[in-house]
Image 1 (spheres, rainbow, N blue to C red):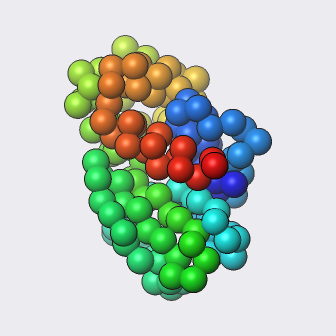
Image 2: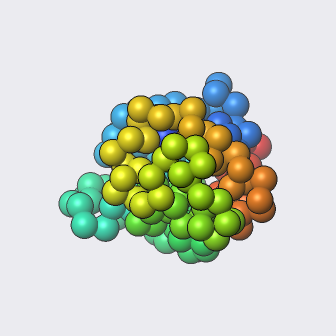
Length: 154
């Protein structure tokens, strides 16, 4: 099972090929972390949110790698994993689009993280189309995320 914070996370992961039956939208970062730390072998995806207070139990996870602004954390006892997008989903996806040469404005979306954050929940279909094109253009960020998610499906 993969636990996510929000609808845009869910859209991103579904677009990368994860079936809806393997996803659970739990609404916030602390809940994602709590569920992942309780369930052996589960995976969660969260934003780093470096300027926000972090849940104390996040310290139970150790960083095992960073690639393409994605941190991979593993629970010290349960083997569960947290995939952390740095610094936040909106910055991460805007950077992926830039690297792939895709302009979010083609989909009626802002091309800056703050603007995307304001509209993303109301334009999920356009956001999905953006992610699809970025993936089709061979984004290394999305490729890395897809590989990490594939590791949690087996």
